[in-house]
Length: 292
Image (cartoon, rainbow, N blue to C red; front, side):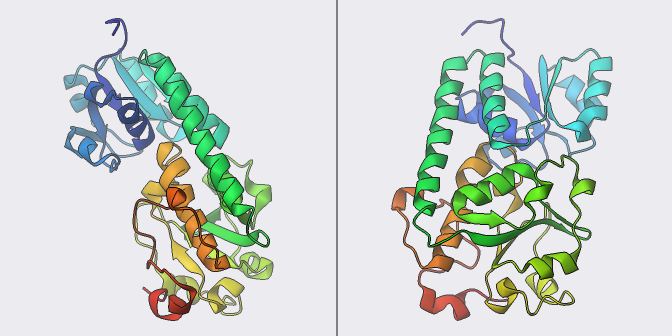
């Protein structure tokens, strides 16, 4: 390995951490975000940041030759690190294509371009297989994916793209181009009017309260609530714009939609982690899937 590539890397978000591990370069990481859970061994690294704040003194003490950040939300962190003389690369991926591009770019940064190309190609191929599997559904299902409960936020682009690949039809397709969360706030009454058949909830950093969703004014008549098709997908699987969302995240979406349709999926496409209130047959819906 060429010694000119970074050897001491701090990752301020999880997706670059997971990507480096998948490239076999986890040993180069010297600091991670406190929110990191994938892969589990990364939790042993020193934790140096949350999402919008960081321990600059701790980062400096680690003597990184590269810090990896994400989005405008970490712009202030990146600026401060640059002022302190530290090299920073900030990614801003918001779509599947941009996630795959990030993986390829990160591979180039650490001298693993060939491995990164293979990883990105494999992830893209797996998405194609899920898309083909979803084509067996009788029709796309109207899906509302909520990222936050108060205010109600939906429509983050890579998630909506994954919903479509998994066999769903996003309830607010017009929001896909809105990059900022404040531009994706939706009116609960409009959600009810559009009548989603399935609701996926993933409240970043906190447990989803299904009873609270069911009790929203006017939602008792919503198809997803009436038929009990309300599922939590952990944010670490789906709200991280990196490998997790393109693997476990989309697999969970697809498996749950397949269950709703009563369609068996190939074992090779099954999620690796437990599904929300795991169910195996349609007959167990009422007993296995219910209020938390």
